[in-house]
Amino acid sequence: MWMLLHGFTGAPESWDTVIERADLDHRPLAPALLGHARGAGVAQASSFADEVSRLAELAATIEPPRLLCGYSLGARLGLGLLSEHPGLFDAAILIGVHPGLQGEAERRMRRARDASRARALREEGLAAFVHAWEALPLFDSQRALSDRVLADQRAIRMSHDAEGLARSLEALGLAEMPSYGATFSSIHVPVTLMAGSRDEKFCELARSLASDRPLVELLVVEGAGHNLLLEAPETVASAIDRVNRRGHEGAAS
Image (cartoon, rainbow, N blue to C red):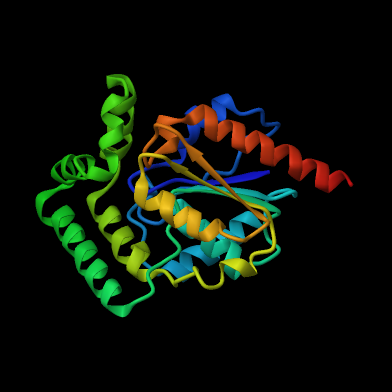
């Protein structure tokens, strides 16, 4: 059974277009991440480690083979799950993953940037933040998507609570996660790393992680940017189907 982890400002339903195209026997477990639990009050910010532990407890409740797919923030948390809870999952797909910052100077800069974004959420409100977030160069490739697809994504973003997203930035921001780059080779299950060809930074990160690691498959999606759930749902669904077949074949052997 699959666990699917969405990105920042996303939601469990961000996976719907992928799930519709995948050949799955069971509905995946797609939890709302810290700060994204709409209608249930604003989750208290804890830490990256605490969120990984919470997700590990959820994952332990699903039937094997346990398979993981995470996008962006969800991919970083997924990397934390694979690193901190070896043996919990049988295979994984990480989309647009960052292994974590190595230098303390980088951490200080990123922490300051996320603190600024959290302050903007609290002081300027959700609508202004979403407008600025959607204008980031990271998402330039999404301008080719249909108005309906973009409107659906904006509706998910606007359904959140500004305080919840601010706390997510403070607890789960890139500066708050350990650096897993040096320990990535200790993950002993098959991992597929996916990135869009137009997402140059994350393509390079994926290539570096995949280098000389036989259990790691690199899949670069031509013409796509960072958010493959929106830009290439068929390709993500195909990758899920391929890993799903391997997982069930391994469980049966």
